[in-house]
Image (cartoon, rainbow, N blue to C red; front, side, top):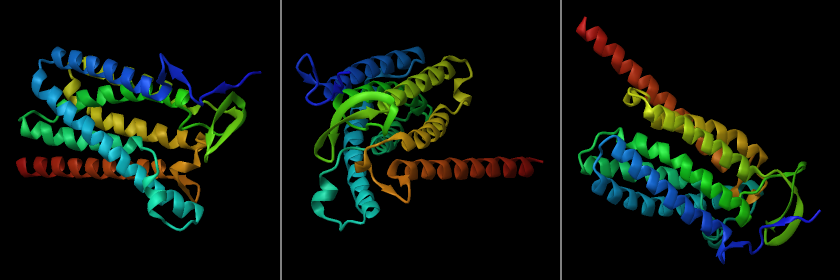
Length: 260
């Protein structure tokens, strides 16, 4: 059987990963505009906020990539070096955090309610699902070797390797697309403001990502004591969501008691 080779794979002479990033941006921005229009949110202000958030996404994704380099060297027991930190890829969680923080700041500056972030949350897994397909064609974020996988050629630590691997990129793409459809359903409801769409997204994705990481085969992302860098971030997100939920419930209880 001839293996699928991600080495030098192009679509219309464009590198596979770049092609799907561009496609993802076009589809996601178009979807974002439609969702804004459905709820009568201002278009100009939010497109500017989105542009700023995309820049922030790139910066934070690379910053977290550097942090993953440190985490990787710790896991491998190697001495930290400037090259090992800088010569790393990007991390989705970093881009996600960058988008949320920057868009929250922009929302406050434009005097928009926090629910605008729920619309952003609907669009994120759509973009992520498309770019994960790009990861498959680009040869990054690949899965572990398995007889249940597909015959796949990619670069592992600088060497071209061909083996049967679980197509974890496509599995995560499917997971993200299903998550997008679920969040879109919540958004379409009349009571969408009460559905905490952003929090639901963070919870469901972090759980899914934590599980998916067990089938990732690219050690460049960093693993310490069997726990990957992204799994650590998933755990931090759980702690954040739980703590803010408890605080919110406590405040609600106190208010009720004071009104009695």
